[in-house]
Image (cartoon, rainbow, N blue to C red):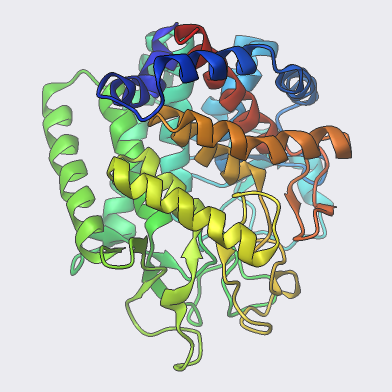
Length: 437
């Protein structure tokens, strides 16, 4: 097993060594099933083929988005030249703002000039091929780039990339500036956590506008688990990249503080779930709406990746997701959230109940929960729960962006983020199985 996969699977290996409920014989039988699973072989081959088609998020998008690229860069590294992988990462640094902020995505400058979408494009002489834009509702672009660089460096072993310069600054320094931007521009002193606009779980659409991607005077700032868990993951990864003692001390202390504050403010120990939002200046929703009843699947998965939940809490979270799937009629734990926000709560027409990010079923995040179940030793559960995701790839002939409750595929039909997370989950199943044969 290479160092990259060992790092990802270590908690699960430790959990097994500490005495999981499955017997050695049961683990061997499961390992054999995984290694003989032709469905995984077919889906993995399809994922590799999809990524050969390019780096844009899917056939419905012209951009290379950092939040998407972060989730299929590992897959892309298997079929694309290293020079292209690095160039995409460097392009995000070329568009980095003076305050350290990172754009959402970049697109061919000729397409941007003819686009009907009203983005406020960013241009730079450092990168004349592209135009870029930033969704200011989100607070995950900077964390996504740190994670993507970590995935590249860890899988490739190319630590020299960290010392490559963009306009006089090394990649490592620019990564740290991206994290510093979050502390300077998106940090709430009262709670000691990051804030963003109100969205549905990990989504990028606020409720106050028909489009909903730009922070303005109508926005309602809040704290949520996704942004802060992603920040913790990014700090973990930066600590794995930097060798400077002063940086390691600084970011270790802050990482530990943010983890403790998340547990204090966002985790409801009694209900064993995360509070959807803590509002800083009021909620956009009616006062009689009980938002705390909403369960965020994607943010919870990211919290597990950030190391914020115990083994027992992970098990309870998985059971809650399965119960939500059954109650909603969805087909997988990729269900964004449950129950969905009521009709009319979001001005964006696509955000109706069980539409898009308001209760749509997204393999893009369900696959990440599968990876965490494997990582923490819940391999049988992960194997059972990934089957619907794999089966619908074959049934529908591709990796769709999201699915409606009845299983109807929606959005981009070649969504590379979904392909990336499923492919990596399959790789992690196989590595676990080889160890436990």
